[in-house]
Length: 484
Image (cartoon, rainbow, N blue to C red; front, top):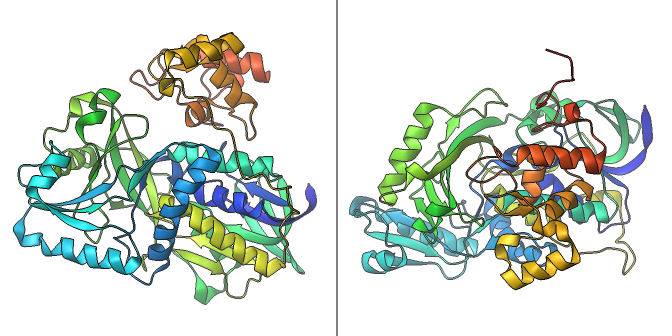
């Protein structure tokens, strides 16, 4: 079927696409986000280091450098407006040999040129005071107090919910197969829908090159290289092992293996950096995880890997020039790339959203909505772990379902899960619930709470048990009664 005309179609509901959608929702425009998966935050945005980078690593003068520093500043502002979890814990780049100490000076000068505030090099004694479990070989570190940690699930969901509240439509399970030109209008075939739009934004992650190449000239083709990173996630009992994000000195393959607390109280360790051909290659390997274990011990001693509750892998959208590709595609009027968004893409997302929305606004000559028609704030989900007993009791008096604990590991109640099911965009799978309220994210990885969450889906959404999935089509948990 052919739908009515949109001003903008955004391809991809990762953190960049949702940030762009949120900023476009400030404008008097009809906007639709199309996503090949069943929910927001299903690609690169869901499997990364969850770091708010300070901005000292990117080469001065690049888009990466500018948008990293701008994104870092906006991240903390947006967290207040949109109520997602972020913590400014600061970051340390650790040098473990006097022979490589000059690398810290390079990063310090680069960071200053990029505009990163309050950078300084600290010596061994101060470093040990800040991080008691730092490696015995550590000699110095670059201290970046504006570095932080963020919940990438919560950030992306918050952006999507605020965009939807301001009129943006979302279309899931809709992979883009064709993009054609009909006069001045783009026609995007996404699943069974044919979306007509005055402008298109390509924020398709590791598939952004395929979207670009559908409209670009033969001499302007783009190549994205999926770069796999493997991680360990440790239980909250291991969370206090480090207080700040601890980096190795970076190499040409990236920032190396880090050890960092998470906003949920866990410890994250990783990633590797391996270029692969398969854009769905998110399997972990014995070799990759062994590399994570070995390299993490170079900067932090006694990492409690016995406390691992899961391992995972994500793909970064690497491009040979190692810079973001943002702008109108040559020969394709009002088709805007937001491509090659690898690290520090998560940190840069707010600034990317502002930049791309500005390009679209200029290209379409759009106006801002009248005063009072854009709602910049969004109410976050209740976090029982952050409440006092009295605050929790007060919630239970208003709604007894806050006292019905479904996920024991992460203390998630029936009321929070029901909230996730009924918001827009709504949770329609177990992983979608996890992204919103944390259920199934703890030590048992859903072994206890999954059946109860499924019951709530049946009760609240009318889904049949056999329709409920872990992560969308193809991951059904039950089969129809009577079938083998």
